[in-house]
Image (cartoon, rainbow, N blue to C red; front, side):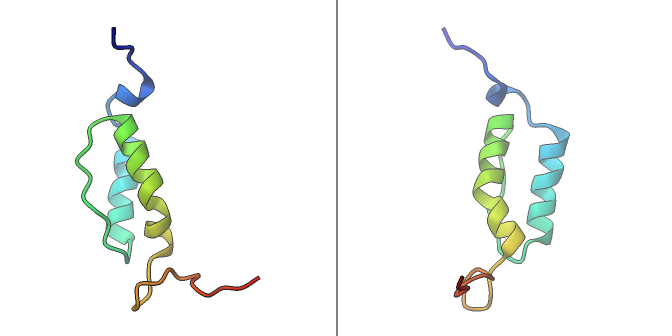
Length: 69
């Protein structure tokens, strides 16, 4: 029998707001989100948060491209 987990619960308002803000304020074109569960939202955020935060320059490199320690 299928055991329900937190990933199957409906998306939260906080997740929905974060995804909308990521897409609205990112200089990088993020894909549309069509998920309906917490798990799908968590996967989308994990996969796209870095790009939404850092963006890409004119040549498609992340803003820390070429940084050296």
